[in-house]
Length: 225
Image (cartoon, rainbow, N blue to C red; front, side):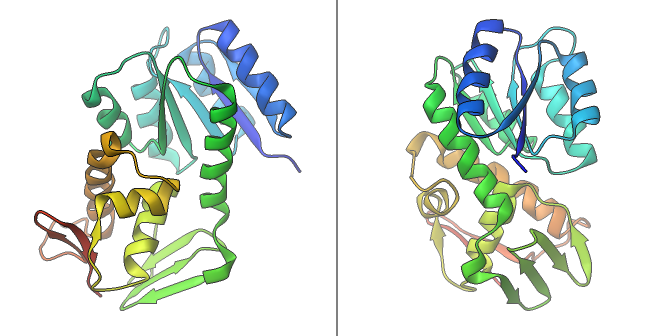
């Protein structure tokens, strides 16, 4: 069964182009032209991935992202005409898995969609990662800590899996970006910090220190069992 993609964007021409390219790539595509209908389509269609514009009528993309993250970890690729790094980081802090700035290539969008979905489906070459009281099942996309299942976004899951697969090893932000996206973009390195903050909140909701993800100042991060 083809994966279902929900496009929420108020520019009909962009929606049409993205829909055509995604359908040609074998995806089932539904769309909405404003925030209110976008949330309705999300609940009705239960998509496998959402392409979400930041600037929308009625409800903006950031508020939609917040609502979706309250309910689960459906992958989100955010689109925006904004270029400020702070806007990108806000979206990533809210749980977006990727970010594309308009104008963009529809072929690149298809590639990004495939990359994010591959992360959701997991890497069967290393199906289960165990480190201390943490278990990550990459085949079923399930994370358990102290017998407690944790809801992670695809990007959070892949960052944690990368760190936990080699406890004690220090990973730079660039190395984590390569592990998550396949290529390092310097402008996105601060996004790793946002995902790490979200991970720490989910892994250690009491906020007590130390947590299992340790900051190595001036270098990057490492995992301690």
